[in-house]
Length: 492
Image (cartoon, rainbow, N blue to C red; front, side, top):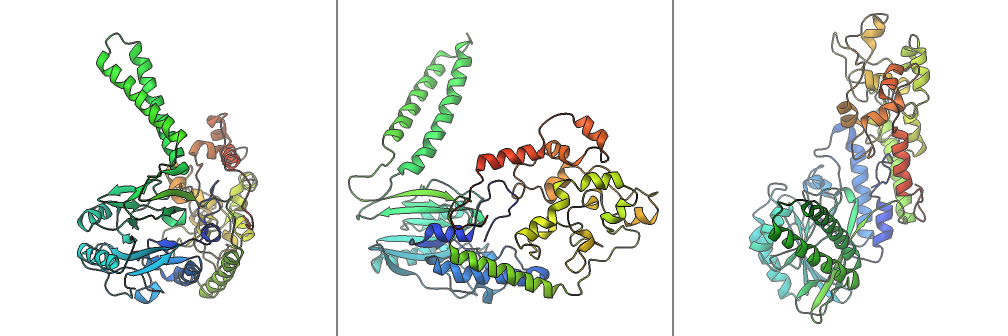
C-alpha cells in the first residue's frame, strides 16, 4: 500500500496509484492482497486489515477484473474476498469470463492460473474455450489475466492463440517490462511486483490486426538503448583501428552495424509514434509510482485509518506478549543502558548516529505498531530475550546489541566474558538484515561504516578506513538526484 520510507526514491503507493489511474480501467494480475504466505500468527490481524483496504479500494479505482495468485490465498478461500478471473482454478470463488464495453470497445476478459501455483486444471483448453466464447459474444479485444511466469504465458499464447493481451501475473521483478512482447499473435504485458509501477495501455481500436505503435515513452527507452549499443561498438572500433591484426571484414561489419543502429535511432527520434495506416494500435508506457505523483485524498485517509486499525490490533494482540525464551547457556538482550555503565564513550558516540533515532522515525509516521517496520527499528526484534511490543521500551532504536549480539552473559560476568559478542559485524550481516536493496538502496559497507565508528567507538577502525565517501553522503546524493519534492496532496 506504500513503500518503506528508508529508500531514497520510494516506489509504490496506493494513494498515488489511485490518483494516477482515475478514469481508467484497471486490471490486476493477482497475488495482491497479502504479503506473506501462509499468514503467520503475529501478523494475521495486520495482513487481513490490509487485504480489506485493498479489496475495498481496487474496485473504486476502476478495477475491471483481477486474477488470483497464491498470495491471495494466504488466508484460505474465504480470504480471497471477491471473485476472481481464474477459469481453471479449483476451490475458490471465480467469476466467469465476460465482455464489457470500455470507451466504445468491447473488451473480453478471462483468467487462468498455473496449477503449480494455484490448484487447478490445465490452463490451455480452458483458455482456448474462453477465447472462443468471448469472440462469439462480440469481444473486439480479449484480455487474459494469466497468473503464471512469463515463460508459461508464452507457452499459453502459442498453445491457445487468440488473446490480444496477456497480463503476466507471476515471477515478476520490481520494475516490470517496458515493452509488450509479441508472442503467437498476443502481446505479453509484464507489470511490476508490489505495485511499484503500472503499465498504461492506450488502445485505439479500428478493427483489423492490433499493432504496437511504440509511442514517445517507449521510443525514448529504445533510443537510450541504441545509444548505449552504438557507444559500445564505437569503443570497440577505436581499439580495432589501432590493431594492425584486426579482421578488416569484421571491422567493416561493425561499422555498418553502427550506421544501421544510428539510422534506427534517428528514425525513432523523428517519428516515435508508428501508427499504422489501417487496423488497431496501442502504445504501452511503464509508469513508476514515484513520490512526485499526486495522491488521492480519500485513499490517503483510508491509509490513515488502516494505520490506526493496525495499531489497535497489534496493541491488543501483544498484551502480555513475551519474547522467545533464551536457551540455557545462551545470551539474551539487556539494552543500551546496561552497556553505558562500562562503555560510556562508545554509547555517547552512538547516540549521535541515525541508528540511535531509528524508533522515532517510525513514531513520526505512525508506523511504530506496524510489524512490517519495527524489525529494523528495534533491537533483537522477536529474537530470544529480545524486543516484542509488550517489552520494547529498553530495546527501542538500533542499539549496541543489534550489531554486537545479545549481551546478558557479558553483563552477568562484569564484562569478563566476550565470547558471545561480535566485535565487528560482517558486511553480509548488515546487508542481509536491514540494509537490503529494497530498504537501503545506497548501502555500501565501508561508506556506511564511516558513519558509525569514530572517537570512543572504533576510532582505530575509523582511522584505518581513512578518508572517503560516507553513507550520509551517498544517501544525500541519492536524495538530491531523486528530488525532495512530493506530489500534490501527499504527506511524504
